Image (cartoon, rainbow, N blue to C red; front, side, top):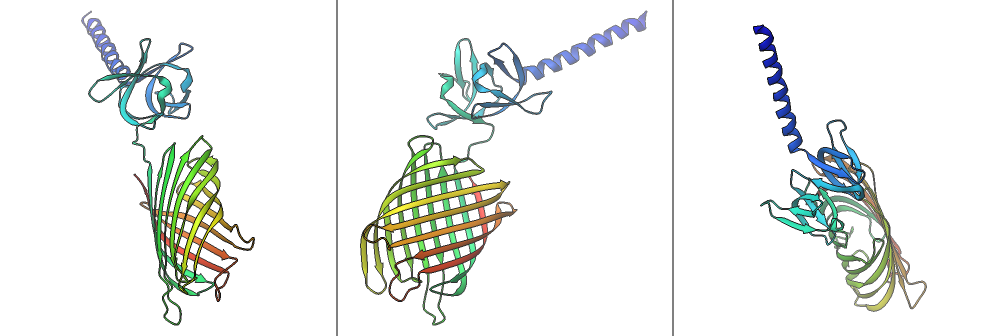
Length: 341
């Protein structure tokens, strides 16, 4: 009789223990109610596009249509990006009374569900910095082996993009004449729609290999994005530019020209990156006055943000200065460092 009573007490305590434990788990879990009345509990990880990712006890990750969510209760603060591109640290609470953002101090702010663009447990990173230290082999107007260094900084947001590039290439001819080259590029893209963008750009270069003391190019362009994903991007734009050039022989040119530009990027495997660029600059006065620049590169990861990059740059000027060749080709092997912040 005594042992039976002890067994009953043990059973009651066991049930009570697991009930308390299970209650705590449920209390800590995020809760989602769908439009068909189904209720899910788990850990909300992110919203990307129209898909809500949830880790549950029975499935590592479920994908739920965000449009079907009518009620939600988050237990942890996430990084939430709104449609106006503002990022806030908040929880989302939604019930019959409406949708609310709860900040770290517990303050509630009413908002519309449609204001949310995405959210994640990770802080969004909009800046990309890439630095290359390269060995170069050049053929054309000069044949030499030397070094090149470059810096590329980009800011990518949904409504606009910023690009800043700067590079310096050292060179010297067999006659010990300097053949250095350096350039600076700045681009600003503003998205008018998800696909169409307008661009303003500024480019400055000094290239002693082809006798350019200084050249300025600036102008507007309008373009179209065929693909704009992390793993695949393809865009093309056309525009006009004002070109001012002073040559080392004392000549000076100033004219308007047309521009056609293509940018391509593909990531077939994690951290393996293929990039290409094509640019055609066409003079308006003569059909034979044009310059074509094309560039292609392949990056293979090493460790800790470092990668090995091989690139080829080809520059063709159909109307070069007297004594200059039309074509210059540069082969680069680079140690590259890339980071996001």
